[in-house]
Length: 119
Image 1 (tube, helix red, strand yellow):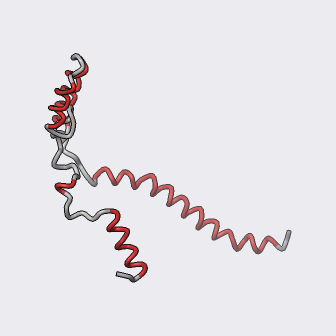
Image 2 (cartoon, rainbow, N blue to C red):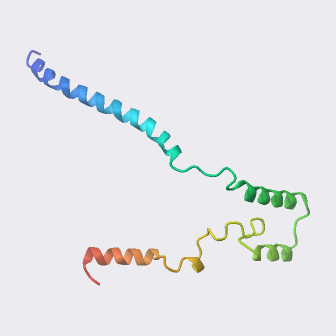
């Protein structure tokens, strides 16, 4: 056992560094999410008006008789769907507004060309 005493005394500072590093990691992992709060402050009136209108339409449909197929088709052709209408249609990604975007197939092909060196 006297042989292990010098070896254990060498690891004592290393053990302190490991404990300090783990403590710092725990402290930072619990405090860093708090900094994310200040990264984006949304406007409190940003979404509720659209949500209230959608909720009002949903409540009306839920209280009334089931709509006929032709009514549903007419309403859904006006926008994204029957209830949502055209709310946030400009924010939605679709072929008309993403012509410059590269497809997954193009991304994979470009990656393979870079890896293999073939063009």
